[in-house]
Length: 151
Picture 1 (cartoon, rainbow, N blue to C red):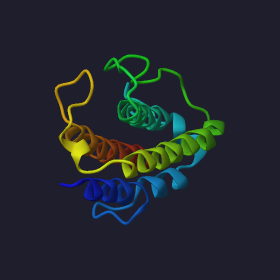
Picture 2 (picture 1 turned 90 degrees about the vertical axis):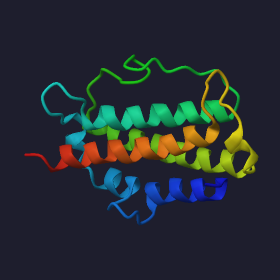
Picture 3 (picture 1 turned 120 degrees about the horizontal axis):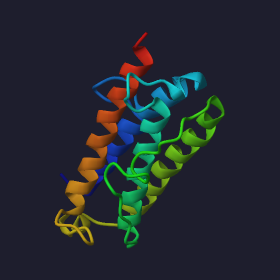
Picture 4 (picture 1 turned 90 degrees about the horizontal axis):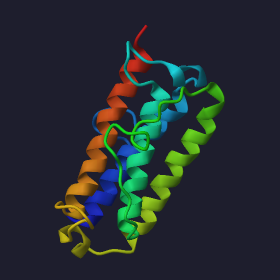
């Protein structure tokens, strides 16, 4: 896969017409604010899942800009423990949209050469990281859909 294809996939999943159904942008716009705190059992709420997705996108942005960011898997900077309120919807949507714009901007400054480079302080390449964030978004979008659809 080349960088242009990765950017296209990132945009398709975010606000295009992906094969699997509605885009992230469509789902985020359609979520009723009251559902941000919805969860099943001891699982994460819709708001926590969206916040988690944003955290990992910010991590990728940090790696692209040379910051030595770390996310402790399962830690507070990975999964927020707070409960989200209806008033948080605008901020979450705005942050998600901002990460999309920033990723597009940063990736457009690079060539395919970036994909073969190792992510600082990792053993994976940027290609693996970028494809991973797309897969991560799709996975969690499925969780959001299930939570939104559950009674």
